[in-house]
Image 1 (cartoon, rainbow, N blue to C red):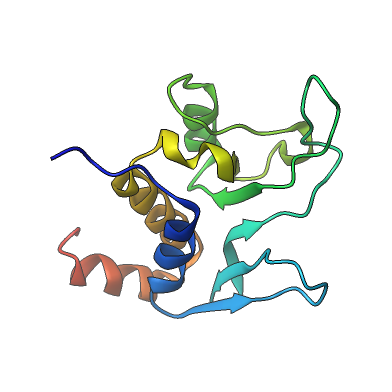
Image 2 (image 1 turned 90 degrees about the vertical axis):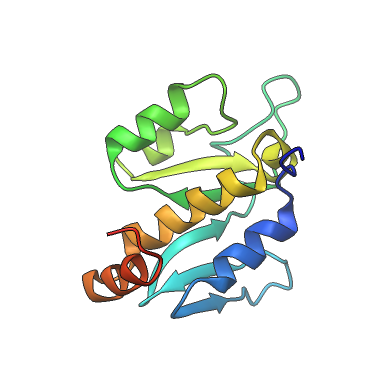
Length: 140
């Protein structure tokens, strides 16, 4: 059976399904939530910004998702690998996160997206919460 391609709904389902997660909604009526663990964001739907634009038209991307990563090394690995849809902008220099457009999620499998979001959660959760989750999933 072929792995299913990731979809936007998967981002919401996976992020919301992690333990101790709160979903922060914006007051502006847009569907751009922020998923947090212990008050720390790990998946963030960005508003259009001048640092992420279409290179041909100059229009701001309106579908950018920011996902935290464990380290600058992980960020570099994700954003320099041409086989992944992740990118960054100078605005995020030194920030442990990668960007992906919602329209490009299908370049990942649902399983790959799950692992990326789980890693984002682990990078932001408290040590106690992270260790509890890892132990429960037999990953330690």
